[in-house]
Image (cartoon, rainbow, N blue to C red; front, side):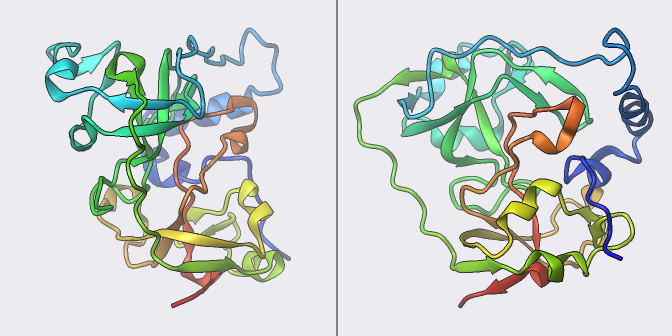
Length: 253
């Protein structure tokens, strides 16, 4: 018998399920999904940005962005992270608007007038930083301006890999639908048998969200969580990179 595929965020267990009270609160919310709407709290969507998917935008200069930040380095509650400064002055294409997202504590929150940019992720320009998830960096529209300039050149991918057939992949999961502590999301099943460019091999640099740090994992270029595995709590527009275990893939040199 194969393991069940559950409607959960792939990182739910590894990020916050052991952190009181977030794991307990998530369990209560899941139990109330079938309850009346007044008990099943759901975060509303934030206001749309004036920039839409496909628009070319320039990340403003560091001085202009710094002028928008409060004493905590935030604008309307969203931080401009250290990884974002390297993208100042460069032009990118808007990937999508972000209207609601689940944060690292497992709480869904509304996000207003914010977008994600194509190829701009938390692992930085050289793909060497961050916690390993390669999540898109989020930009308030105040940090951007329309630009006719040429788009920044994309980084070359690091080879290709084909996802193994679903039946073969499911046999590697434990009774809770996980491999080495990381869940196989139901939405990932649609990619079985397909071939994708590799964004990076993920190094286990953040032990707090890895149950077994020695595992070999990969993230594909442009292949991200669409937020639907959250079921009644979703969708989430954050767009984290999906983690693929080495045993689920046929890697090409």
